[in-house]
Length: 341
Image (cartoon, rainbow, N blue to C red; front, side, top):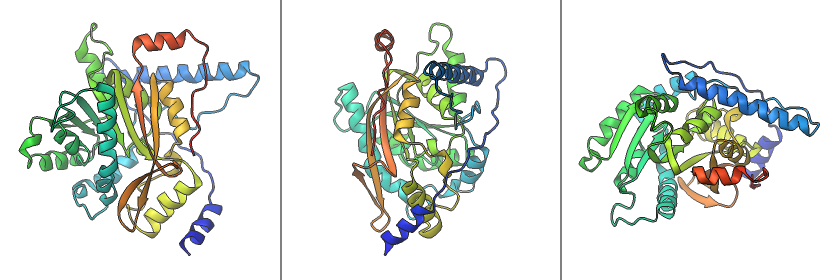
C-alpha cells in the first residue's frame, strides 16, 4: 500500500528553476570578492572548453551569490534554535544520524592520520563543524578527543550549543563555538595569517553534515573549505541527492505526511547529486575518497548504510597536497567523477 503511494508521488514530480541570493561584502580585504572572481573564472574556463568541442555552453544552475548564507534558511532555523536538544522533536533524525556519521568521520580520520590515542582517538586533531546548529555533532567529536570549533550564522543556535556544552566539563577545553559564516571565518584566517601563512589552513578536517542543501552558493562553500583546511585535510559531507525519490520521501513524505521534519525545511532545488558534488569538490582541489548511501527508517527511527545513494549519502574528500596537485596538473585532464546508484 505504502509503495503504491510512493509510486504515484514519483510519477507526478517535476523540475523547477533556482533563484539567486544577494551576497555581502566585508570592509577592507574582501575574501568573498576573491571567491566570486574565482567562480567566474571557472565558469568562463568551462565555457571555453565546451566551445572547443562545438557544444553550447550550459548555464550554471547555481548562482554566484558570494555568500553561503540564504536569509530564508537563517530565519527558518532561528525559529527552531531552542529545540536542538529535544531528541524526540524536530531534530530527532539528526540525533539518530550520529550513530552513522560519528564513526564515519572517526574511522576515516584514523585511516588518514594513522594515529592511535586510546580513549580519545581524535586527540591532536582540529575539526571545523560548519553549520553546527546546537552542537549535535560537535559534542561527540569533542568527546573523541578532537579540538572542535562549531560555527553557525544563527546566533541563538550558537547560544543553545554553548549552554548545552557547558554542562559537560570534559568538553570545556575541547569545544568552542562562534556565530559566523564559513566565508567570514575564512577571511579572518587570511587577515590574521599574514603573508607567510596565507592560505595555509588550520584545520585537519571540516564537517558539513546536513548543511549543503541549505546553502546559497556551493562554489563559495567548497573554495572556503579548501582554504581553511590543511593540505591533506579531510572534508566530510552528508546531504540529500537530487532525485525523484528524494523529493517524494525527503519532502512529501518526511515533511508533509509523516512530519519527521518541519514543513519547508528542504528545497529540492538545492539538493545535489554525488556526481555533481564530486565534480565541484575536485574543481576546488579535493580528491573524493568515498561516497556511501544512507537510509532512514521512520518506524524504528534508525539510520543504516546502503549501497544506494538515491536519497541520503555521506562523502569523504581530501584536500590535495601541493605536490599532488602539480603532478595531476602535468597530465591530461580526465573525468574522474564516478557514477553512483
